Amino acid sequence: MVTGAAAPVRPPGARSIDEILADSRRRLRRLTPQEAYGRVREGALLVDIRPAAQRAAEGEVPGALIVERNVLEWRFDPAQDARLPEATGYDVEVIVICSEGYTSSLAAASLHDLGLTRSTDVVGGFVAWRAAGLPATGGGHTPS
Image (cartoon, rainbow, N blue to C red; front, side, top):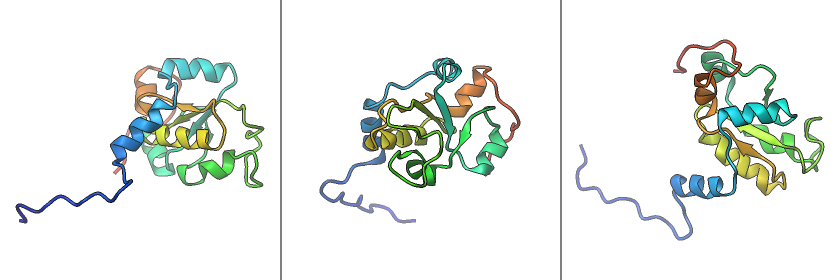
């Protein structure tokens, strides 16, 4: 057991993930699961960025567009050939959902960087969505 080890010195300009997350969230108008559900019913795109194993274990939102996190920006940048048909322009309303609402905040802020300023995420993610009794299928397991 190592005791008395000094904490690593942060290089100039480096930020902690907590700082990055807070900065990302300041740029968003995050939605409760109920607000997100209402926006989706009005035409917003709900985009689930969880990996397949996590969706299988936790469940899914019927009708959500599945775009795993590692390709999100390429699929939604209107200037990219790899964009999805749903990426019709910079005014698309994208609501990102992950498991608990952390990764989705970072992802939605990244979409803002692309110019999709109507992007946001769901507070509490899929866990909160399901707890709110909103439409969900499958799951019921905790991913390992």
